[in-house]
Image (cartoon, rainbow, N blue to C red; front, side):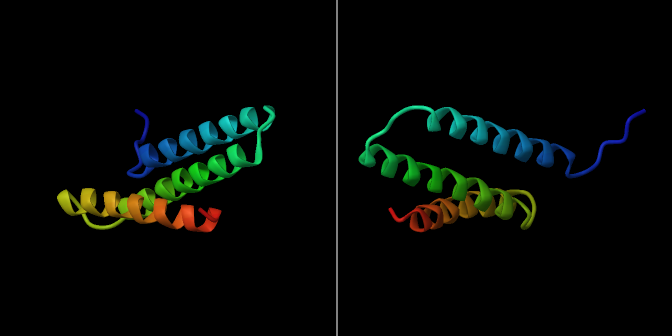
Length: 88
């Protein structure tokens, strides 16, 4: 019988999400874009990346409803921070 580790599902979700973002980034890099489109992409990438990172960090806090609230708050804060880092 295979062992199921506590964080195995979370780790798999993170790896899948990061891989998907990387593939999208590579595909988008192939298309010609205007400076305005590139700025919009940078803002979106910053917000999405920040939301994922914040949600993962928030998910590590508490349990039950508190964990859900911490995950949502982490995702919101991460999205705002990601946009700030991207210069939006």
